Length: 245
Image (cartoon, rainbow, N blue to C red; front, side, top):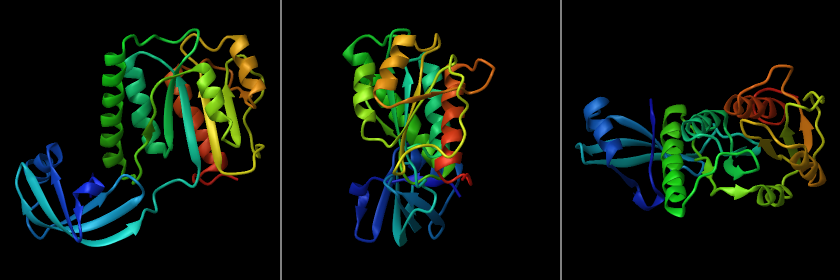
């Protein structure tokens, strides 16, 4: 059963309310009725099961039957930092990394990245990305929303990364293959993926000075959006909940 996202503000004792497009989907597409079971999450790691009391295209009222901590979230606090690409490519990255269990996503600017001019445009893009993350969460039955952070510049990303134990920079010119075990003390990691034109050597040097190790993703050149998803999957295998070492 599809999992629906509810705001904590929508919870009142043992009752919950779903409205907007989700209510319409429940009523018109899924055709759920009173007394039907429904699965929900607050987007912060807690899952709920409920029973529908009333349903309409505008509003679904639900009685909460149980509440528990999610079992679908990764034990790895994984941050993906991707250089700005064309917007539809960023959209696809968000969809894929939600499925993989990534904790947060940081778009950033570097020398070869695509500029996103204007404060209003940036605000609209962030809102769009947050909407995509919410929809993806419901489809893959996660219980924690990917944290979508505002765009940063390259130096801000390097400063942010200092709080992470494992730091990976994937670069097509690196000759170091990724294999476990990898150095690090705790279960937090940051992955750095460059733009379509790749990182400049100076940027990789600065990343190394900030504790990043540069790795290769193999002998073939991957598109930036492909590299982002591939890298996150490999890190999840090595450090997360995908059955690695």
